[in-house]
Length: 321
Image (cartoon, rainbow, N blue to C red; front, side, top):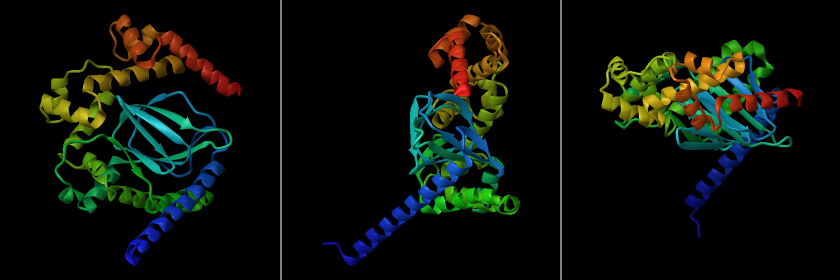
């Protein structure tokens, strides 16, 4: 038989779960209202994007920037290297680094569409708040961890999210209130069990912060030949330390990271600028067309020309539909 204390704790958990369920339903109704058509929708609130999908999707390759991703309805799978992250209306996804990934909506229908939101982070804001909270003094000494993680979304996070989305109904309040609510959301995330992962990427001289610098350098210079010794020197790490911590954060080596950036950019160029594979491969840094074709086929599952044709047909189908 339960003691009164145990019963009280169980009742409190049930009340919190019910509160979170009600909040998720309200958030879904709001996102549904502001996303009439499928796709990503920018809003009047800086860094806040809403998304809708009425059908499941093929994997979409992209570079995710630091962000807080929440689903009000549906579920999504994100592939980082060889790892899979799945999140839904009960779990959020935090991206703490610029990472090349493949995202796929796996639960959506016209009757119950995928409804989500993304709040982009500014690394400077993370660093400033972490410094203000003196998180650097309390951070445990840990090995570098993945620059992406999921967590259970609670009512303490849903509450400011709801208030942020509700601001869309009163644009005149956005300049004054949106920064305050965004800061509150970031505060809640930094105080969460995995919040130290976010804090570490912004803490001066941490391994994660140096990997952030390495990622930034690679992202700007991915067309250039990769010289790991030079990259390690620029971020003040040994080659072995760079490899170890880079793989811990990104689930891939610097060379694999560069390769994904090159291939994703080549694909974007071929689709958006209507250039051939040889031109696109050369523009992203490949000297050998056969190597480019081989690596492209291995990564995307089919040769460049066939892959681009399929993607254009898909785009045409969405437009005509």
